[in-house]
Length: 300
Image (cartoon, rainbow, N blue to C red; front, side):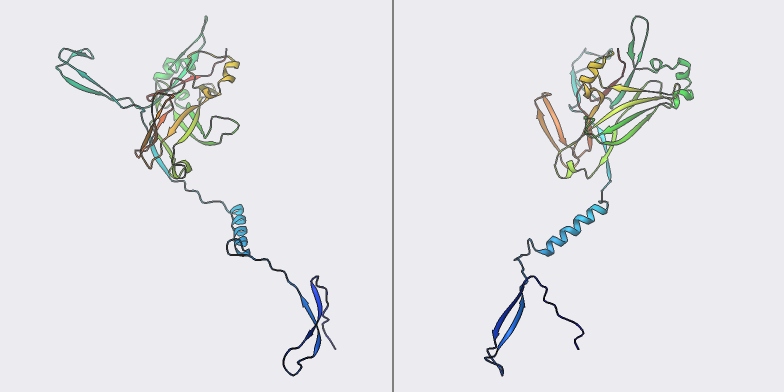
């Protein structure tokens, strides 16, 4: 008795007669059943094994967080132009003093600073000034570094683009007032990824942008600032027509090689790479290598 029944349900099943060519049964005709199994020609380059491996890699990448190298370099603020040299002869006056010449003096530039100008409203018109009195603090609060001023701070928010619709937030830097008597702060260093794709793959620099906000511990309010070349209040139309005023632009040079190019827009040289690990301020809206000037947003 048969325990299993063999069923012919294969779609490519073929039945034919076959004559045995050799052996005891040579010349005997029998009924032969065969199944055609189609195989396409595949080589190593596009075979099934490669396809399977690719699917495994794609699925793994979807479910496993990628390895990201977050090691950073410390970059220092730099200048586009070299330090100046002046040569003096006998009798020339330098800083009110006569010199015995000839003599050559190097004028070293000051470290990069951020200067925040607050707006004060007065009868007949207001004005901007780089002091905390315009921000609403009294002279005693400033001189004695009282808590309402000492606990205030500025926050710089960094982005990868100046376009609000496309930008990604990167990180924040905090400038604490502490015992500062004026709203001026050094900005001489910046940390950035050593394996940035612009450095490693594109062999170019990285540009980033930041906005500035003041957090007032005295009144519990915040004040935003513009990178505005005009030291005056603005209307809403002007504000909307100049979105770049909201950002300060920095260029971080590639730390793996030294290279400069001539930029016709500024009629000077632009850095692409520097093994000294430096960044500088883009010379827009009146910014210089030594100063970033930011004005409190005040609408007319």
